[in-house]
Image (tube, rainbow, N blue to C red):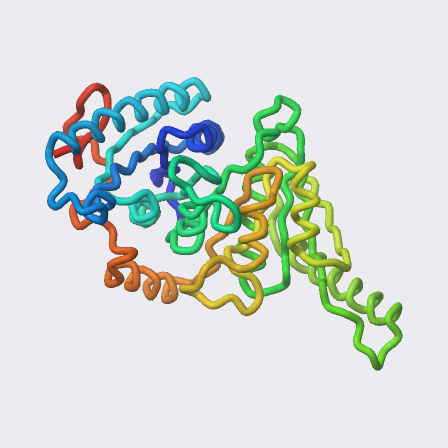
Length: 332
């Protein structure tokens, strides 16, 4: 369970997408009155992969200097958005590993949808996909640019509910987001099942609609919505298409990191992947794995060289040495 002291964490790489993530994360930290931590990954392992063994100190110093500049600019942006407790940190690891490591003690991790060195096309936002699949906490991927418009503040939060076991957790996260933003919540249940050939398709569709309405009615009825307006929507269609379409008029779409049949340890569910690549607004991925599954994923991260975080990675602390206003526990 999150505590009031857990920070929101975001990562930067000098790209515009990363600075969008900083703006979104800073506003979220202000709304929740929690600290914000901004991380810049130095990506020293990439130097090893490029054949520089070990990376010369001059090259490391150059990367650190660039990183400090990125962090100073990001901190100024965050403070301009109203964040009051902002910490910054250089991390020697790759971006995905640094953020996955940070997620173990974070309330939320916020990432941009792309950035420097990212692949394009189907694999765009590879860091976002990796963090969304393996983080130990909820993750927001900041997409689109309309969320920054002044009128976007009145748009609803949209939640996708499929009736799986984590649905209550997804609803709770969506309610919390709508509550701090003082907007209505639209809860969507979409069924993509085709009518069975032995039944009347109209009757079959009516039964599916009634079942969906009952599901949402029971789920929202059992949950304290904190006085916000909740609109329940049941449609016949594919969940990913419905949520992508509704994202155009939303300020945030909330869904589980894996839907029905999702297997922990694999990549994001198909709906989550589709939203990461096509949503018109930020996407909130609720961590649906239980504690045992998280431990299994963490074990994989710790033993798989492809996901192992840096051995000297540290959480932020007030005793960290500072340089140019930037916390640099890893800057050695």
